[in-house]
Image 1 (cartoon, rainbow, N blue to C red):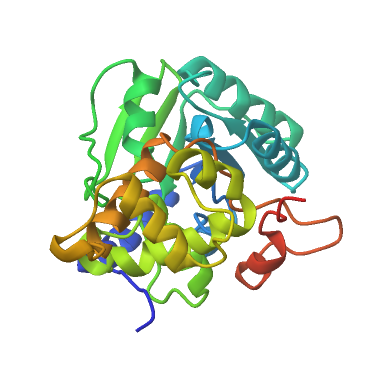
Image 2: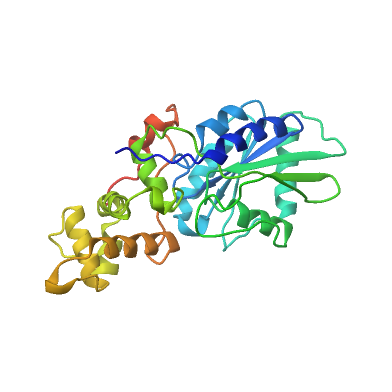
Length: 296
């Protein structure tokens, strides 16, 4: 069955975004640095197409720095667009955001009035609420490891002239690109109750085996002959004592072990997508060609 997750409150939240955009001068889209394309909501992009856009590559400490920087360069080359990077190693603050917004406005010859409102959006569990608390230097938004914690809008003050409207994490009704959907599930965007951990871990292990085999080998003592997801998951089960009576593998526990270590960063930094090559279009159909290249 294809992966999909679109809780009822998201439809209502989308309508609220449309209303708020009438009083908004620019939008901020928060993306996961590991999956910038998969974590970009095409529905949100369509709703906000007429507004200048600031993209924030979030959770940069979980992705490869060089590839994240290439993504920033790519997004900065787009019209009416500015890209900033945020992570624990180099946290973004309110003044950096305001300075970026001013640069975006000036580059596009947009007037800066006495009061400016920015709308911040992104998919669930991309770290938007944590970023909001960071920008305001106080806890304003509830955060959690599960997606869809924020379900209502909230307006906050950055300084005397700039305000920020936080919106609930939004998905889109149909995830047509299933490779992207499994990447979203692996990063924790789709609620655990809506997907099978084994399916997500299996897909992730195949991708990591192709692109980051050395990480798996170091972390889980992966045998040289391992060539498929089953052999990877078996190695993880042995390394994490996910073995049932009689020596049978506990696939569910092994799957949770892989997903937890991937999401927390214990497994290392991963970039599952690369920026499009010059002249190519970045969209859902392009996911396969933007995947990272296998190790040589």
